[in-house]
Image 1 (cartoon, one colour):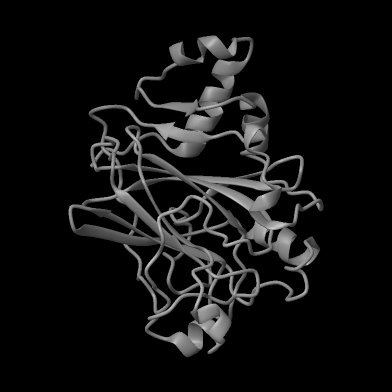
Image 2: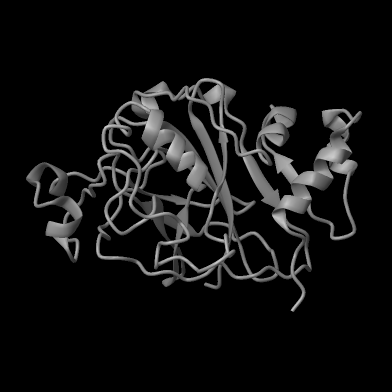
Length: 277
């Protein structure tokens, strides 16, 4: 089955298009696949410079989503070509910590942590954007603890803490727009034994759902858990992406999000999800 051009090749190729070309002319720079990396706002050159290197500085912003400066955040998404074929995002387990989520973009509930903007584009197997589908995400807080009621393993997920059980921190639902994109404001997740840092998600359309999980670059996780206030108190995770038994083995990095550390120490992360619903 033919596949779309790899994301790294798209980044490398599009960066070469940008050399000496104005932002206004970007839309005219396409390859044989018809794929194009697009942006809903500025800072294009800085984003291209940051993506391939995976370098992370010691400066990390704290204070939760209240620290986000909306006007300064690039909003990347991958615009895939019509009539191409996309490879399905692997289905991964829902896990024992699912609880119903409120409809909201800021899912932090006012909790502390490194502020993160998460962007997802949801497409089908033909790379066609899926509009008006619900994206439900949930993850633990900086201490590796889940909030919410009705979880299958409440003692494991929340430690039996009543304060966590009665709240919905770090859970939320948003519908995709016409381009199949959606974003959330949250804080970088912590970790708990046996799992790499990750986010759960379910995409739902007309009662049909597709569940998966996404992770973060191990170098990013190490930088945060060794240098960032709040996170460094717990130290580095005992499980990496490669050793996490939930994620695919070997060189398969389909679960990893693309990430960018901004100058203020906050994070932008994004991923295209190919689902069948």
